[in-house]
Length: 238
Image: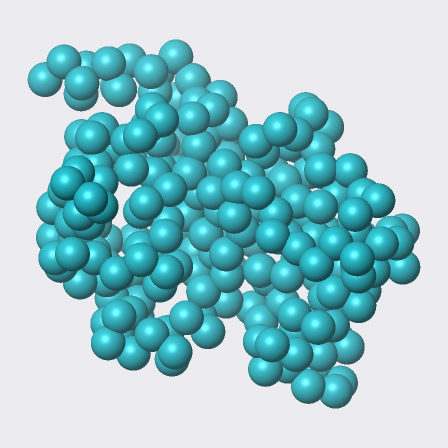
């Protein structure tokens, strides 16, 4: 039986004089792969920043496993992995050195650290470039390194902001493969404006407009990008 991992209670966020998020209430169960979809400025990246612990709500609460993220941030953030839209990496380090360094920051030590670095390198197919300096890698490989570091500490919640932005179709399919592998073992929330990818990868999609949820659809694997576009258009018109 699925249990609720993440719960948003009337979350709003004011930036300057503009409400980037408006009264979002949402529950996501363990093992779901959920897409957050909307036009530029809809609030996708703001929502992921709030869920990561990096941007506190102006109003409302974010609960992970029943614990308030912003009351016990240090405790809860250890349960979250983050892949930003632009990989934020130490580009003068080799892949292996970077992963070992990040694993240490996540609190991994000795045998556990070595085992997890080896595991994520294998999962993300980084073994051929393990000794290569990160700045020499393609964007696709840098995105794989970013995903690998986010999975090092085996977080319960994985957040991905536009994970295939700038990638070619082959690199994008590699990200899709990794998402399929972690599906059911980790809860994944990703932002995207690519409806074709969302239809292929996800089992649920939340549509945002002007910082508010306008639709929340369960996917059965049969809906196409055109079906999702129709849902979005109907929701916008309602």
